[in-house]
Image (cartoon, rainbow over all chains, first blue to last red):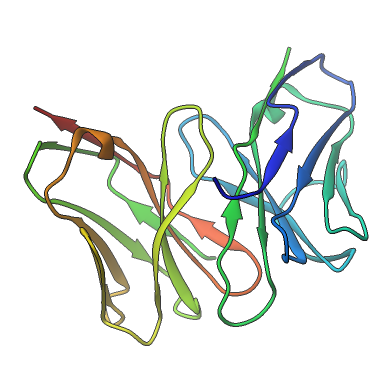
Length: 113
Length: 109
């Protein structure tokens, strides 16, 4: 196990609703990254948080937003859910620096109906 | 833009070696990674290689990097049924990782 925990594990939402996904980073890690993995695809980078600030963003619309807390845990919020938002959402924690490894949680499976 | 490509499927007999290939376009990646994903699970880091290395061996795993051709491979020796999974290569530095589409490895007895 990596020490990165995500909640909930599964979630079903209706189109137009809002959702919050949570991630607890591994002890000693100050950086959290979020990825979206659609069925049959590789993970796509959403954004990264480092010391409570956004530190890079992928090609996702503003309705995808996040937070990082002082204990380095993180939330991913998605507003106005669309059917195409159905995916596995993965959180990865790491330490910033040149010799770094990203450890992934088990993911949250979001289904939008 | 950055792109990472992998073949979609590989089938091998138990006990044989598996070789999973990956090509990438972004030569600025500091590290190149191999992750394993079992059904319904997250990503497990298998191994990584620094961009200034040519080869790295870690027990049954051997990673080869050809920087000139931007080609990365993962060799699994003595492949077991428990190795059946999807394998992703990824490039990146200290920020985002760029993943390939994954190679599904099926191991048959």
